[in-house]
Image (cartoon, rainbow, N blue to C red; front, side, top):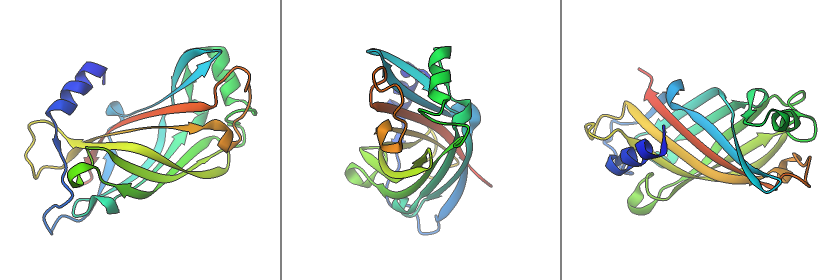
Length: 198
């Protein structure tokens, strides 16, 4: 989804409120692959770089009565991470950074959902969880937005859009190789479309 399309979509989307009808309970959702991307950014020798990493598996449970009780478990395929620079990708996958030979996946398990202004998950909400990278597990908090498509009925939550943004310090996970070339901070921008499992 390009920036203009995303901006138009977000501008026209209706935020999900905290309270839903009593009959709406936890519902399983699945990813729509073509609407999902996991992007990361980093600085290499002072130049901004970017890459992508595919989702290997996801378990998404949205509690429509109380969004704070929703739960997300995601596994990323670190071995298939890509950057625009082939030599940078080789170094990134090697033992000094991601060490995919020993740790081919990255795992995230949500532990807390905080709603934003007005009890909505589309206005400054946060999702905290445990991120396991290189066998090291540490908490991480991401900014979260959850929307339904513009024009859809208020009670139609079959399709939802999610965006998660944040950053991590790679040294916290032992991915400390090439410290003289690569900055400590890695940015995250995760966008996903999900549909309710029927």
